[in-house]
Length: 97
Image (cartoon, rainbow, N blue to C red; front, side):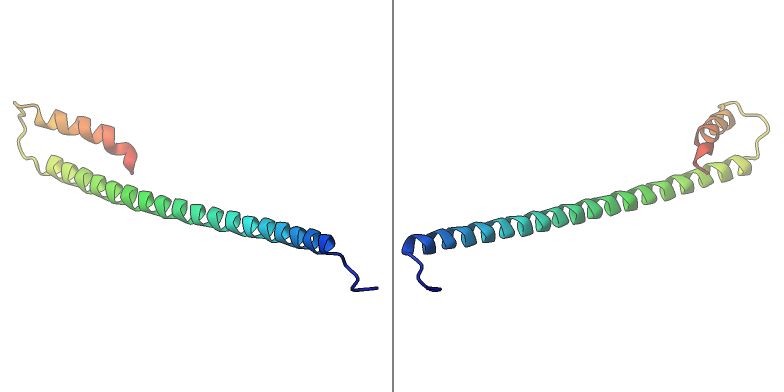
């Protein structure tokens, strides 16, 4: 009685098990793909952060050099307007600190 199952019932059972395993593998694949996409986005974010940090260090160094050049400039008369140019640049870049 217990094992008196027709071949059609075995086929239906096999179809249900196959569909369940297909759904399970789909869910696992979606989760894996989502994790890989997050990892890739994290890597890109870290790389952009490194690039931005490098750029800010370069700008800070350039700003320091401009300030030192401004303070080391000894001439009281400035016929070429170099001090005014330096002051303009320093004023524009002063928001970086």
